[in-house]
Image (tube, rainbow, N blue to C red; front, side):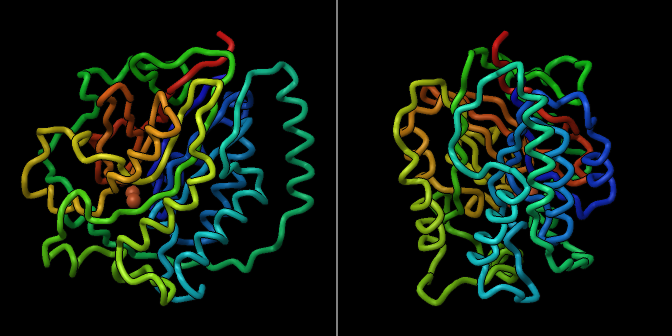
Length: 327
Ligand SMILES: [Fe+2]
Ligand SMILES: [Fe+2]
């Protein structure tokens, strides 16, 4: 069993949608995928993504990203209602949203086929909400110039070309069983105060809406982090945790130009790092920044495996192999 990671697949973009649908339906039947959020804000696309990926992989784990809970047309009471809906939708498609130990077994392929049949039979019919998002995201707005080459790995290597649709990360974990811990999160400006331009243009401020009792980014972040509390106990196994947002800002490569650091306040929260240290994670996978990184800080390895927008052509457009079980 192999464990792959990818985030920010943004399948509103045709190229990215094609990338996803071209993933083999046979090559990953024994494998696990960590899907780190930002699929789309469009429910019909998210549903198609869950359907497709849960057929491609033995098991898919998912945490929602900020784009996923955008609700510009206010079809939900608030973005937390959409978040909860997405978790339920994921579960209905057999996509895991909770902590779980994964182990390699020989009978995986057979039981999986039966599970898929049962899952499809129990699916709720969703009201399709096809919409073209026409997203001009702030990340794009504040994103990279054409000449930028953040080709990824801080260690200087992006792994060799493999025979599968993924690159092998430096030092991938080998073990018999691994505990996967999805961590929900947001940003709380602990990475810096947002500049007025960011406050005006960051799309979450326009496309997310919150219950009345939530008054600030701090409240939003605390709400999502509170959902992790019951899962912060130490495991008997090695642990891979994953989130959409960043747990610390010093994992951003030092070469990022000052002008692009305007988005840093909305990248994550230091409190998320406190949580993953509490549960004793070995590797933390995250997304959101669209800057591929594989680095270590204070004894924990951090890895960003974002697919990113088609315009971010410098990103390695492959999943990252982060662990191999039973080898
Ligand atoms: Fe993204
Ligand atoms: Fe994001």
